[in-house]
Image (cartoon, rainbow, N blue to C red):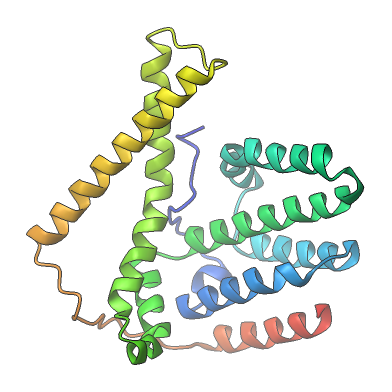
Length: 238
């Protein structure tokens, strides 16, 4: 599963979504992530799902890749469903909507990272976060934190796989809470060690938080056309 995991990893494809400006894609994901919480009925959720399906097809992403990247979240989805089933059975429809929202957020994030390089995402965040300078927030730091968070997702799953394999070789029984707790502590230790190594690497390379990204970003005709389609979509669904 870990070998097939592509979440947080860019894959080059000659698709329309790959050609879009990184700022446009990031803006789309942010707006959709906010508006998705305004959907409370099946008709609009179906229309929204069809829109995301079209985006996935335009991105030339294979469905098996999406399913593989959803596997680590299956337990969380089951947990959400069980919570509604046990404590709010009369609101089970809302539980399905909550699970659907979670799935859509994962798929949208996957499409963004699949079609956009990390360097382009950093440049996009820095460009969009420039107004934060008024609040004394440095755009470069915000972009760095987001890019690190994206890259740490596949690293986390790799470390989880290694911790699980190491404990399995010692005949651990993951049906026991004590062994699950030990695996989680092992994962946290590995992640903290990775974070410490990254911090040392930034200091050794004289990271300058006041520097600016000089990558030039220009909107193309595809970007303007996608903006128009997106505005029509938002208008129709909301």
